Length: 193
Image (cartoon, rainbow, N blue to C red):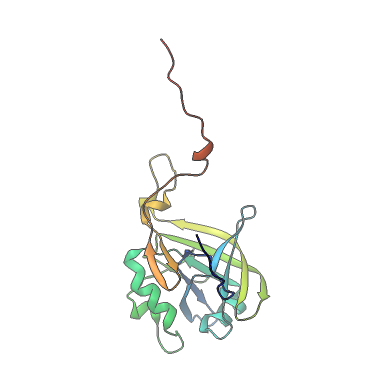
C-alpha cells in the first residue's frame, strides 16, 4: 500500500465527543463541547481537557478549578454540535438545547441530566501549550445512569453507544469486535466423563 506524506497535525481519531460543564463564582454556568480529552492515569484517576483560552468557558474553569465531563450519545448529537459552535457569552446553552441542569455531588459545576455518565473533575495543573491550554484534573466522582448497571453491579458503558468525533464528523459506537485480553485468552476444554 503506497503512502503519501501529509501535513503535520493531530490524526489520532476517533475521540470522545463530550460536553464539559463549568461554573464561575457568580453562579454563571456554561457548556463547552470538547474532543481533546482522555485518560491520563488510573491511580489516582486523572483526565484532561484542552481548551482555547479565548473560549468563554476557559476562564470559568481556570478560576473555579472544576468542571464536569458529560459523556454523550446519539440523542445528544445536535446539542454536542451546537455547544461547540455557539458561545455561551450571549445565551444559556442549557435552555437553548433543552438540557437539564443537575447538581453534581462534589463539584459546583452542574451536570447534564441527559448524559448517561457525568465525570466530576478538579484541576490539578494547567499547561499552556499553544493554541490550547491543557487542564489536567483528578476525577473526584463519577455519576452513572442506573440503566448501564447490571444485577451484579457491573458497569456497561457500551449500552449507551457513546458518541465519538472523527475528523469533522460525529459517530455512534455500538459493535464490539473483541474485549481486553481476548487475543490471549485460553480456550476452555471440556472435561471428559
